[in-house]
Length: 222
Ligand code: C5P
Image (cartoon, rainbow, N blue to C red; front, side):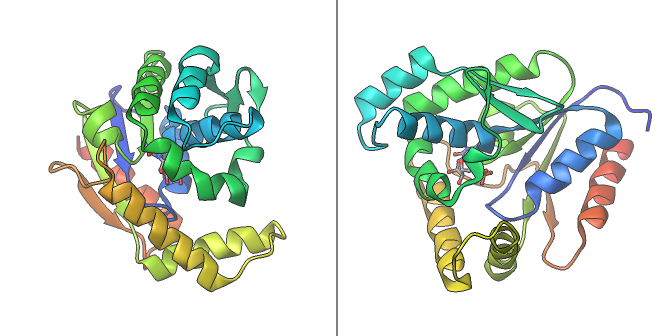
């Protein structure tokens, strides 16, 4: 597909299909794929490796500002924390449970936003997360808000964990998704919200490929 070079930003709640859809769009138009959630997960992993609680703000901020460089390789599929591949580890349930507490610290966010803009300097980018349409790239050429019902999102996350052999119940995952939504939407700094100029894509009843096509269509129109 031949497109003018653009910055595209995509936000939405956990399990909305945002990452799968955004990654596929990036592949189709050969854009850099930036998953900002992986960066908050990497910070959470680093704090756990160093034995620093997400509630010990001073130590955590110091760690993030001084010893935390995050990069992507393999067109966004591999997350590197201080040059080490942590792509698998950051998907574990224990990281999932702590990440929202880490992500609500304003100094952690400031450092991540800085790193996200550094990564995006290298070319055209499609970035996804909770605040990329509102805070990180407010001037993005195109913005999307990808969402789906809580039940459907919990079902997807549950299936992912099942496939990996993680022991959990559907109710537990549904509660965790609701809890994370609540934390992401109600936090004081950079809460998850739909940007006024974002196009809504509801994936509850459509397939990944349909969502990808909808976005590609909008990019073409642009
Ligand atoms: O997208 P993903 O579920 O991997 O993100 C993990 C967590 O990281 C989110 O629940 C949210 O707390 C945090 N996050 C954020 N801002 C972003 C991306 C993710 O606060 N831009």
